[in-house]
Image 1 (tube, one colour):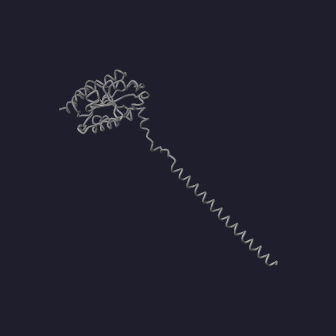
Image 2 (spheres, helix red, strand yellow):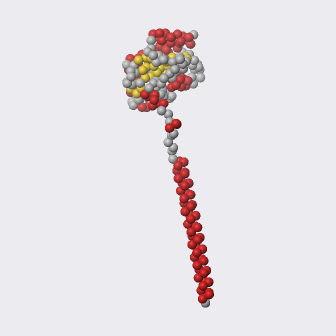
Length: 237
């Protein structure tokens, strides 16, 4: 009887110990599975979280241009405009299939005195009164007809980067200068187009108390106007 009881206790003890071992292994494995899932979730959250741009990826060109006008190589200015103006000039070549390929440019800048700016709320009606039409590209075109029909004769762009205007926020907009440019050869009467461009520059400068500058950002002189006229005539011939 005592022997049977001893064996029964041994069997019961073995079953209890085995159950504890199995339970311990199951608990450890369950804990590892939970930790693995947490790591996967944290990794997935990090992947979906928007990353802040690196310092090297950020561009401060627009901020710098608001403080200082973009500098231009005077030796190259006769053959190419500022970056913003050049992009706008190149886009004009795709406006119509019949538009001639630009070979040169006439550029006039209207620069405000230091410390002063043109308010967008005043600039917009002035530009529209000169027959300019706002384009999808973000600048103003002067077409052959003031209604907006016909080829583009010349354009008005922001003198500072990015070179465009936000038509929906002109009340909050201001700039220290604008630029007028036409491509050569010009569709239609190029001399008449230049006279219109020059007249628009003078009217804007008078209205805002600004100064008209040539392509080298020097005050516009009679000699420079004559040079421009000769250049227009060369392409019109």
